[in-house]
Length: 82
Image (tube, rainbow, N blue to C red):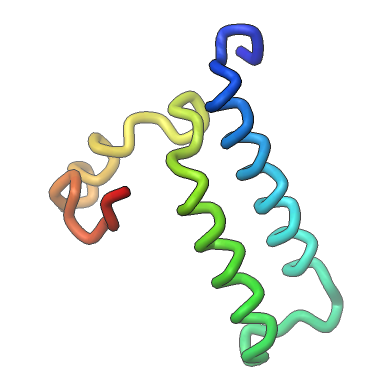
């Protein structure tokens, strides 16, 4: 799909991929613990970076509105608007 993806979207998706890789690397550290304020802050900061980069590719996450309806939430309920 790279050839059919706009340069802007591709840049966002690559940024999201980079952030996900950082999060996974942190979770895999032998010293990682949910109880650590430093570890939690690291993950929260990366999750905020993910949100700032926008929505992930639709092919990856599917139809989010349908998924939210299936779980009983209105499509925009509880989701920050960008």
